[in-house]
Image (cartoon, rainbow, N blue to C red; front, side, top):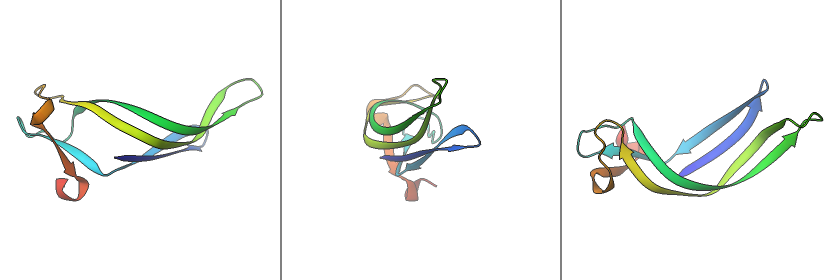
Length: 90
């Protein structure tokens, strides 16, 4: 569902997500605000400074599972939430 790349730019960690699916609430029509509960397995490059400060410079998502999606507008979940391919959602 997601592909992610994390990199450091000007000392800040930046993550870019490539999304293949969006959600649509069948109860209220919401396309933009959802609470998503899931689990993610990643491989990351940890870079520690001499002072012990951690910066994660690269992170690859190896596996991700979405367990529950709830509409922020009306609270609907389960069968009320549709997965929509990105091409069709705009």
